[in-house]
Structures are given as structure tokens and as C-alpha cells.
Amino acid sequence: MQQYVIIAKDGTDEKALDRRLEVRSKHLEGARQLKAANNFVIGGAMLNDEGKMCGSVMIVQFETKEEFDHWYANEPYILGGVWKAIEVKPFKVADV
Image (cartoon, rainbow, N blue to C red; front, side, top):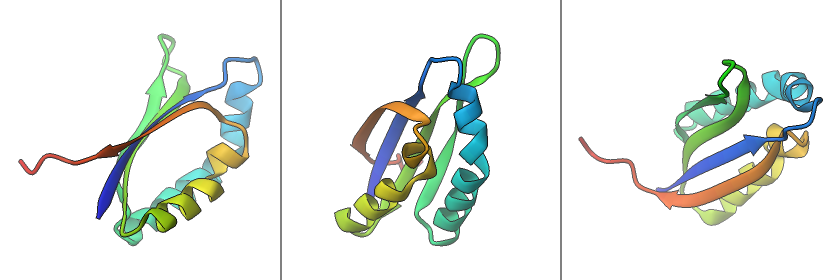
């Protein structure tokens, strides 16, 4: 499977945290579905200096680029305008 690391920063406007919280349950449910299908490797929220969520890091894996693209196009944090700066890179988890 091809693995990807997603490093996504939330918006910095005053409504950014509200947008995140509004779709967070959908995002987490999607992550649970990915995990059940063996597509979710690890992930979590990045925190700012005040300990508030300000972005995300995820490592996911898919058999095909098309499967990844379908997930990416339907990710609630993207559709909900939560993630504003997104980096996606091919990745390989170390076998240690």
C-alpha cells in the first residue's frame, strides 16, 4: 500500500476553531472508518501554544491513488474549510 503523510494547518481567523468543532465528529467518524479498513496508520491534532487545536497530521495508506483521491475529496475538514494549508507527501513508516 502507498502511504501518505498529511500535514494540514487550520485557518487562523476567529472562526477557525468553530469550523473545526462543527465538523469534528464527521472527521473522527471518517478516521474510524479508515482504521477499520486498514487505511488509517496514525493521526492527531496539532496544538498551538495555548493547547488549542490548530491543525492535523495524519498518516494514511491506500491500495491505489484513486482510493486516496476519493477519500481526500470527501474529507470533512477539507469540505468544511477547516484545513487551509495542506501538504500531502508520499511516506513510508519505518519497520522498527
